[in-house]
Length: 173
Image 1: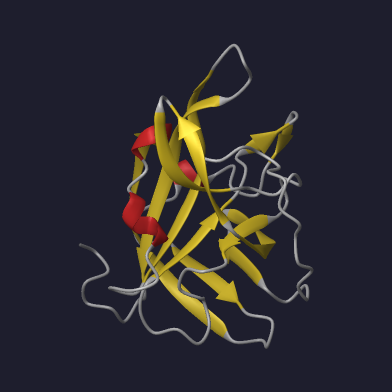
Image 2: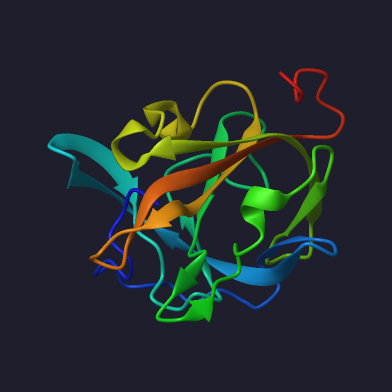
């Protein structure tokens, strides 16, 4: 994502039941809360969510909407598509079909379902900053890297998946 892989945040351990997955498409992965940073990307200062060093884990925006309990705002998850030659948990994100259903399982066992609304690619500096909002329409946004890999070993762009609750009539907009 628009963040430095393995940013120097200390991860808070969560019970293994706090997970995200897409049946048959993406492996189930635990998430950990992270603070948003201000990063310099392409000469611009933008908000960024660091990703865990371990490509099998995801970051959850600690001050965004939370997957369980909140009824509005953006739940923002970010993780690796690959790192150090290892496929990350979000390896297949760019190829998810429209209508795919993702599941978030919270530490208390609460299960929420989200329907894929759209997938798009954007430049690193062009990630819409409204994905960091804790208010507004309820949605899930998942971000990983994509596009060509540069000489520095980093991906050139972001892959963004926006999802809404299956019972949300605005989810496909």
